[in-house]
Amino acid sequence: MKDQQTRATARILGALLVALIATSCSNIPTAREPKPPVERNVLTNLPGSNGKVIAVKFDDTKYSHPQEGVEEADVIFVAQVEGGLTRLLAIYSSRYPQQVGPVRSARISDIDILAQFGRVGFVYSGAQSKLRPLLSAANITNLSAERNPPTIYIQDPTRTAPYSMMAKLAPLLEKASDVELVKSIGWKHGKRSESATAIESATIHWPSANYRAIWSETESRFLLEFDGAANFNVAGNQLGSQMMIIQKILITPSEFGDRYGGVTPKNHVVGQGEAFLLRDGTVTKVRWQRNSPTEATSWTLPDGSPALFARGQVWVFLTDREPDFTYKPVDTQVAP
Image (cartoon, rainbow, N blue to C red):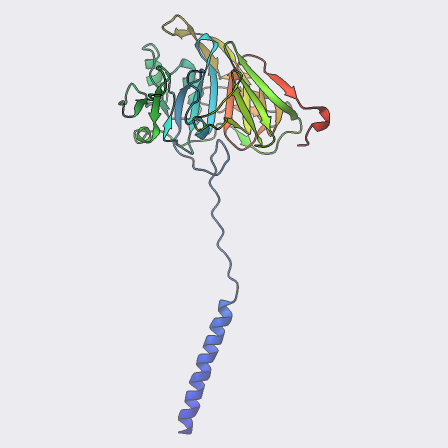
């Protein structure tokens, strides 16, 4: 009997010891698994995906404003067209709005601008017959209204033709199976240059259009005016960004033109020249160089070191005219 009591007591003590050990072990801090790195878009360096590259050709006259979907683009190129006007070529790879527009026709300059991105899905209303073979030979997937039904390319009844065509991106993405994922086009992000100078605004000129970028301390970004008026989207928000480029290029007449006799200009984005980086309320003069359409553009400071970009949507203004800057007083210049 005594042996049985001894064994029972031993079992109870053993159970208590096991419970005590388990409780103690549970209180020992365990190493946490490292969090996976946040994916960042290679163009904006903002948290986001690196999806397929979809390019959209926007009209950019006062009749097409307000535009829809521009604010969701990762990059917006502003290029000269006939009559000294401008059109936008917007690049999407991290976010795809439901609808974009007004969509307009392709131009010869689009081919070289897009070549650096690899295989691109190109959304546009159409192209003149002489340009179509060049578009077919380019590294472009044709997602235009010439190949898609009016259920995808719809007419906005609140707008007037030819400024009324809008495109739905979701069904076009389904047709972009051969389009490549976005890759770097030579931009490096990082600290602002010590040579940056604080500005209040910058005005970019073309023969029949102009943009003005005004730094907003409240919103910490440049807000855009177009032809002297605030540039709003359809939601009533003013377009703009923390990061913009004024790229001085050569613009020459091309062999193409419009039905009214206007000559289509060629925006030469292959070559080299000067540019101005607008970021964080400052401007920095830099050099750009691109040796071939398929190569990335290099951006360098006067000492040859890389010019670093701010995070965010990037506007690229392609012009052959000198911009005008309004500088902040010397005593308000900011340290890098």
